[in-house]
Image 1: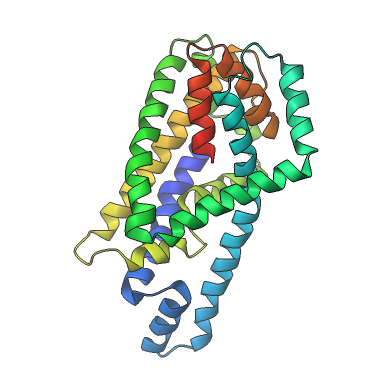
Image 2: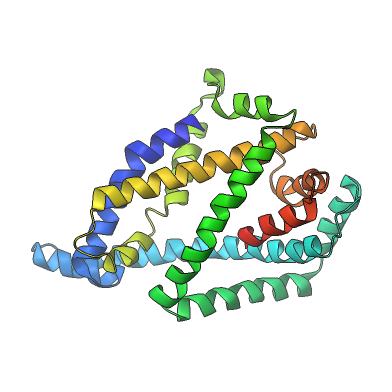
Length: 274
């Protein structure tokens, strides 16, 4: 966690500022903005192809994110119906495996997520993305604060804090560092030209450094609150934090089902995972 925070502050903010600045200067899409700035600087017009690479990166992210979001839709419906109440780990795990073995249901949920995404994007930046974010992001913070507050009352709270924040230098390998850097770039959406698109709509009078720092601070705060909330419950239930997809779709339903109002919390959790 500490390495991730360091990369967000030391690398994420400067790269984020550069991308937003390119978008704000060009006032166009990534390819057009890069091409216009290259022409203005007397550089090769081929710089615009970096925008295409960014679009390909976003497509690659969508290719797996849409699949996981489709899974989340299925588990959202199951949570609302209270299907996890009283279910054992074996029953939830078997249900997850059965769901993964059903290609028709997988394709339906995947298509439903893509349709909802296209609907929001088609509404435009102001009426679509901005309006939805203004509604959902404050609710996300409220949810995380409530969950973190509850996590502080569980037996796993201290263990989660130690697991997240106590340095473990023997575990500090090049692979860990690379993964932390990749996660920092992923959560900030840098390197994919997405921030250039946001920069194209950014007012000239708005302070770029303040905006970049605010985004980084909010990103870190969400990561910290989510880590504390989730792993406190995981450790309190004696579960393995390295379960991968099983943590999200098997372990967490078990853990949340034992909380007061667990079905409600779990439904909200999977809603935001969509």
